[in-house]
Image (cartoon, rainbow, N blue to C red):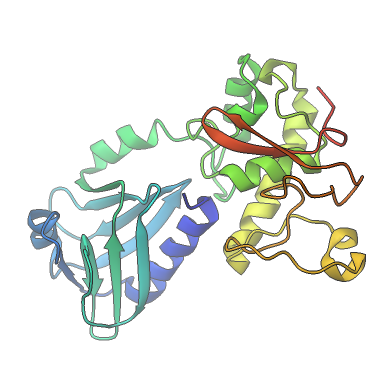
Length: 271
């Protein structure tokens, strides 16, 4: 499932291609045909992301907000206009560009009030300048669940996925099983500030890089990481390999239905 920086990049790509333009909106697959017809020919005002939620705003009467969640298999591609191919749920196009949505978990047309109801369930997004880290802290501080679970709870920290979760906990030497109510406020502030930097960097570069300068391939004289997710990381998908900091074997386990990666030596702190 895409992490939050991917959705923010999509919002930016949609704005760059279509913002302010009257666009053609269709549903070649047919599953969004009624909604597409309602929006067809209207002006696309803009697009924004909140965590893993993408919202596209059209200047249409009544319901005018397209709410998209890609889920596990969804894809949304934006580029030069091409013929339709495959099962395209939603197509947005003008004379130059097209954007095709395939296989989303959600693609629905909402009113302002309906979107506000959705937004009330979405947690603090480190990429957004209007995010409230104290709102996330209040939920973490009163919870006995592991911080490794809480960081993946999209009602608490929106947009944080498996990679950012594993990497930020490693960078702060936090045992992923630490209960939220045992985490110090200062530690949470440091985690949040780090997520802001890392995730905004991901928006800018399109990849997740979490290693510090002294642990890059160039600095350590090691080969670069080969993984379809790209980027240099400390523990994510490095189970069975030596920790880049201490040499201990990186481990993997299942936590709340997702793979968790951590270094048992570096990450021993409950604070």
